[in-house]
Image 1: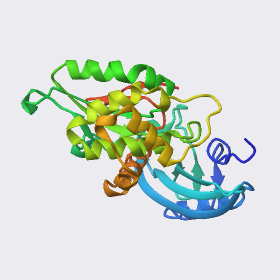
Image 2: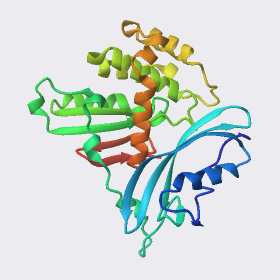
Image 3: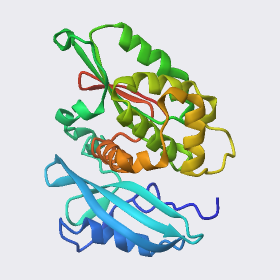
Image 4: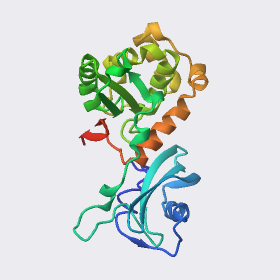
Length: 275
């Protein structure tokens, strides 16, 4: 893809010396973006999270929104490690270990009620809490999610929390599919787990090589044909604040260093991370 915007892995692959102060991460990112010939316009650069990862070092999460040379809009969350003078995608300690591994994740927010999709009727029986970060178009998620969800449900002592993490760089329709899923689960809160089962089972939502980006209307039509008992409309997407919820899921994923799907936490411990 000629117009693909390359940001991480290239511009942050080495340390950059800068005279910017600790709170100038956004200006640093803006300066990098301005040098990228594929970027036509910068719409937004905003620091949405900061974690202390060692003496004088911080991991900032910067949200960017830019327009490329074709007029297409791109939204990304970029991690930047900084001590206020140097900026990098990763920094290593004296033993050669990434200091990003020292990030203390705010797991108190990992199991929030608004992300709960399933719990035993008797909440006193909950012994395990599972958080799943997933992308409907991720092939491995499609392969594993239904059986894993059923396994947790069958355990009778597990609460399940679900976060949408569409990998839009490689799955062009994942964002709209996530918006549809969020809308449906907000509209039918007692049927969240059934909606997830149905959407993962629907072949229309599985990624296909060479697929083109479809409109939200098209994705809604496919959803309604797969789950006719839980119909939604485009107006529902706005009514149930699906975009805001997705934004929150993605920002939180970036903040706790989750960038791959599926990623699963059980009782606060990351247990699955693939490709």
